[in-house]
Length: 277
Image (cartoon, rainbow, N blue to C red; front, side, top):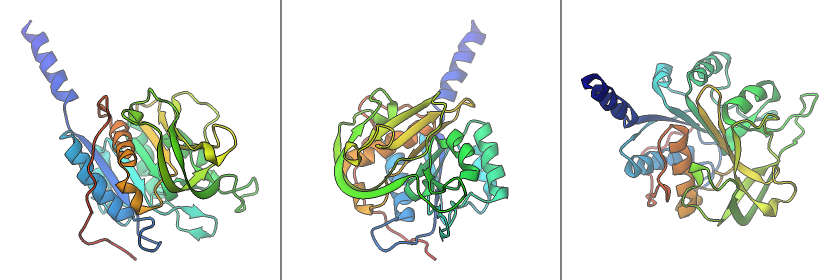
């Protein structure tokens, strides 16, 4: 009986253990108000740690930690950075052979992964791994490897609708209006086991798949991945539903329980030194 009681206590303690969320923010390449990677990372840290004491957020600017071993204890890794668009832009910071090996090790142990906006851009050579890890990417190459988009971009103000209402990341969310530079017609896995669409924008037209601007995947290794094409305008952090969605989604990717009405996070202005080129 004493052993059973001890086991229950240990199980409860493990279930309530804080989750380590590592946010990798890339260097800024756009003008003020656009692609504010460092500001967004700082804001997310504040909001996540205020929303739940079980979220411990670690920030790394310039796209990659000085000590990559910190990733070995991450419950989820969130990337908000530039991506590669043919000869334009820069590859997602972890897209180097030695870094990809580190990331693959994290995925195999069940670490979560989230890709935000421009960090969803990947070459087809890495596409299958990205599909397995996060569930989707922006497809900018044709079958010859040339820069010829299959995915697309459109900036508009439109209604964003929950696509799988039972998903924990969508708790407390109703359709909401947003002005965004939406990426759409994204590449998604052929095998949809564990994969779910999260948000759609019907105004983008086409099929439900082509309208999908956020998605998730529950991987076989136990890890949880997601991607979203949203994240262009810094002003969108002032939209309550937008903040709620990101808080819910990041928390879910780290294995945290999302409350019935979702996480609340009052907007604050992120301040302090912002790394740049």
